[in-house]
Length: 385
Image (cartoon, rainbow, N blue to C red; front, side, top):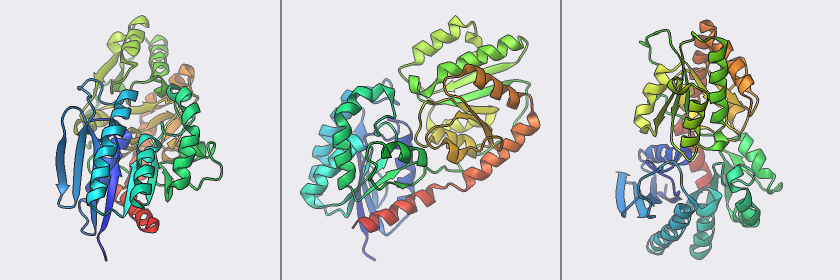
């Protein structure tokens, strides 16, 4: 069988970005083990141009976008535009020199637009992976931009060989932009060897609620902080801590909120935690909570499942594909600190329930491998040619 050659476009890749970057990294690791594929990724660099290889057949090109450290999880509009310009020029040179069978773009804009233009120029089919914010209606932050980009996004999707959402919920949202668009679903995976429960976990009497997330208003973390206040008022002697791992534009506001509520010492902000060190946070904490207003398929929730954690989350995006209410977690109303406090209280007060929910979470994660995800994409690459 002829070796297939794929060009990846994604402005996020560790250490830059969040879920989409991590998903790309895991998929490329799987492809690095295959002899029937050659894959090149064009992504962003904070400072200077770099090249690296995961194997003989997987190469990564980092093009500079002028980002100087700072908030690595958040890509500004300028960062995205810089990548679109630099990434397009670099990918154009690659396509002029080498023959690719398919282009895989993460995000409709800018990568899908880049793939559409490059695909037309070099007669290469492309597919678009929808990740969340690239779908109109997903993020309040981009409401104004969606108004101008909606027509372009429809065109990018129409001309793609395949459009792929990472959850059924995101697919449903995408269909509001174009009801006739064919959209497949390929869920995110999780590495259950990297994220797993600690069988030697020690119980010290503290109850730790963990949230691993970008710190943006869309994630609803301020309601979680209010919920912790409610729980502490209800029982002032409670040994309770909220652990927040991540960075973002709302960091200062959330810290100030904890101070205003008088629970500064009960809310621990850890900032950006290196991906390989996150497992320790999942293993130590008791409950994972993500009260987001909107999600695609949360990588951090998948990691929490793999670590055997009970989940408290809002119904949005792919949450219903990961959590069954009353089986491995509880659903809560969006923007409701009271409901969050109530559901957290249920789990906090029942160790037997937490253990049972955690075991079910682990079983779910074991059925969602990156090997399966990467194989589903390979099938789409072949069908696109």
